[in-house]
Image 1 (cartoon, each protein chain N blue to C red):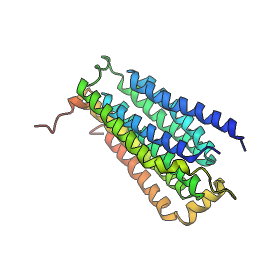
Image 2 (cartoon, each protein chain N blue to C red; image 1 turned 90 degrees about the vertical axis):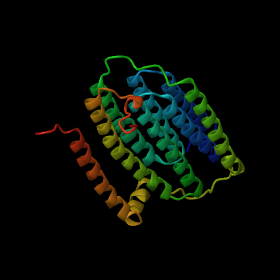
Image 3 (cartoon, each protein chain N blue to C red; image 1 turned 135 degrees about the vertical axis):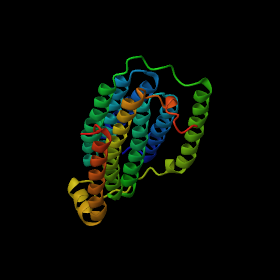
Image 4 (cartoon, rainbow over the protein chains, first blue to last red; image 1 turned 90 degrees about the horizontal axis):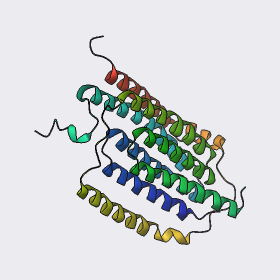
Amino acid sequence: MIPISFFLLLSGVLFVLGVITFFVKKDLITMFMAIEVMLNASNLALVSFSRLSNSLDGQVIVFFIITVAAAEAAVGLAIILLIFKQRKTIKPEDLNLMKG
Amino acid sequence: MLDLKMSYFLFSLLTIFCVGSIVGMIISKNQAYNALLLVLSFASLGGIFGLLDAPFIAVVQIIIYAGAIMVLFIFVIMMINLKEPLPPERKRWTLYLSGILAIVLLLEFFLALKNTFNVSTLVEGERLSSPTELGRLLFTKYLWPFEITSILIIASLVGAIVLVKKKGK
């Protein structure tokens, strides 16, 4: 069996890559994808801890996280679509309505 | 059960696919390519879940994440259909700052995980990994969260429809 620390390290690397993508990219859709990457990294950590402690509670939490991520993707993409309809842009720099 | 060499080989292959496609996502500027690379990454993550003795989560990951959610993303990319290409990346200092943040975060994770490298012996014995056990747990111990999730899904469904609906109809 592969040591559990490999999976945890992979989860950390994936989370960091998600953070980098979120800060480097310039359009809302790819930033949203970066959030999904971070969620998946946490899922991987939860599943490996569930394997380590030989209990299924971690997998149940991952199940709930996937469900919530699907709901979040539906609402978030609807908001992005609405922003594009009204402002004709998906760059976060152009959305400065609250800047004054 | 896979033998050790085979599972190491599978793990490294899936890790290369998973990390490599996200690095490709950082490099690429095309949103549709980004979505397809993310599908590849999530599918290989499903394989990694399979290596961790979690077959149900692996299948759910591939069907819901790599299937349903990414199809939603691709539909939105199709509807947005940008006329002008995306502008170049952010200012230089943002790149440097995110690089520093990434290094700090990686060091932090490494320090947190340093003690787990000694944990090589896993609990042997009966594996609790069958979907039957998972379903039993879902409908006994986690019954209330499960029901509340359905309310959340209904709320998000109604919210998404109200947001995108045309005014005055």
